[in-house]
Length: 182
Image (tube, rainbow, N blue to C red; front, side, top):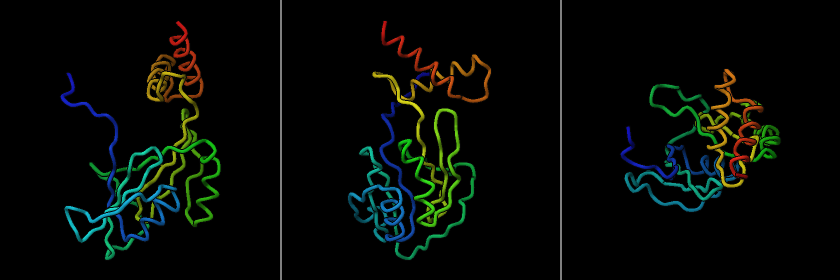
């Protein structure tokens, strides 16, 4: 079946936040996403709309309302809900994140090895699960992370392994580099 539309990537994600200060304290001061502008929520002017740069020029936006109070309860995982948001960080950032989060009173999972990436999980002030994700590889020139992962998945399936591991990534990189050199 052929797709009827073509996505070009994520434009932005909008979350329902609590008050303005709580949102800025977390998204800008903890995650380092610069507040680039704010304006009223044009669909509900009782709310403010904060725009943060995620680091790659794309934005995450937060609807705030001074009458809403944040609570640190995990958000229920139900059908159609968001399980977590993952943000790309460097390996260096991943290595120091636990200590930096602890300094701010934020508990985290510690680094979890996912085979092709490392992950750290913690909750935002409203209970949303946040992941800091760091690839363990750089794609060869002319290739994307997605292409490396697609090839690694193919190699993993041929091995009969349950998940992508370092050897799958390494073999994927070798295969893709050989393509470049032909």
